[in-house]
Image 1 (cartoon, helix red, strand yellow):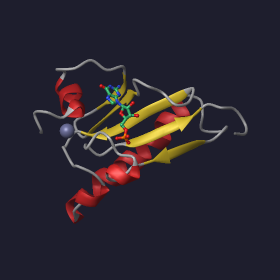
Image 2 (cartoon, protein in one colour; image 1 turned 90 degrees about the vertical axis):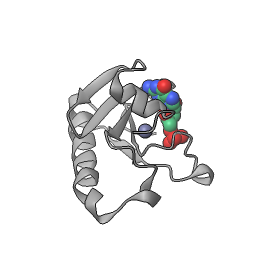
Image 3 (cartoon, protein in one colour; image 1 turned 180 degrees about the vertical axis):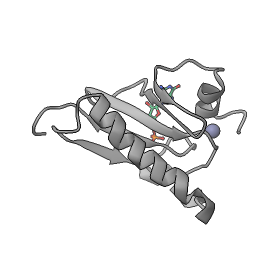
Length: 112
Ligand code: 5GP
Ligand code: ZN
């Protein structure tokens, strides 16, 4: 946990979020500034800064995040039309919240 991390605060219930899913390992909530009709964030409970900070022990949570993103895409009705999974890494990669997350983005329809 990192006390000044907004995603840690959301996970701890100290900041609000519109949750789509949560369990003991990961949470999924809607992006406060969506860039598509569907834009949710898949976030591990553990405070990991980014892909750059991953260790071998994180293999299972990464797999779980991707599988959950796939399931949530189906749940939100965008599995067939298609979607993007995006992870920004570092400031130059567009990362602004330094708690690992996968953007699940879609809902434009059949083509973009
Ligand atoms: P990054 O640029 O780090 O890959 O993405 C961070 C994302 O988190 C941004 O798309 C931003 O809109 C979202 N975000 C930042 N603060 C909050 C917040 O307090 N609540 C929610 N739901 N999303 C947030
Ligand atoms: Zn955090």
